[in-house]
Image (tube, rainbow, N blue to C red; front, side, top):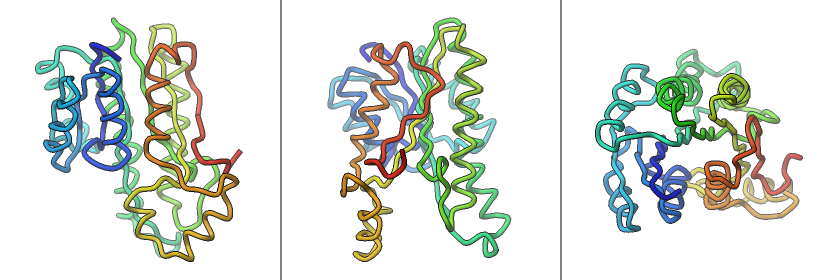
Length: 241
């Protein structure tokens, strides 16, 4: 990762921040795109001896992303990698789901991947690069109460495979990761009974850690994954095989 520049969307907290910090530990320079203030995350990343910048970007906004990518190039000089991690949930059963619930999740989870990839990839055409899109187990197997979220994450998988086919000969790789139940604020908020039911369904009988996702991101961005493209890697403790 040394001397590389990686954009991590949603990198101010949660899994995105864990990814950004781990890539920094491996020598990578980081650009965070988020609407949540990422300056504290940037300071932590810089303490690892690399460069890091925070860009306040609403990744669901086409023109905001265009401007954000140009600002990264002006300030950091190049873009080698992209991690599309930003995402939200607005969970409801389908008949209770409002149009705005559907549209907002699609904009943040799926349109953001289109926006960021479209503007980054044209700069990768000359140099090559690697893109990792964070999908979800919900996008692979569906999940009750998450029609919008599951559809957005399934869309990411189809999008990833298409980008891999379109730009593989230009030295650009695109892969997806589908995490299962990862320890975050969302899982921490669940009651004990819900956690027990989830754990029963996981063969490894434990939740994943954000680092489990970060390890795979690093592998796919680095030369270790240089002959892998168009793949979806499940990180779910065996919950879906």
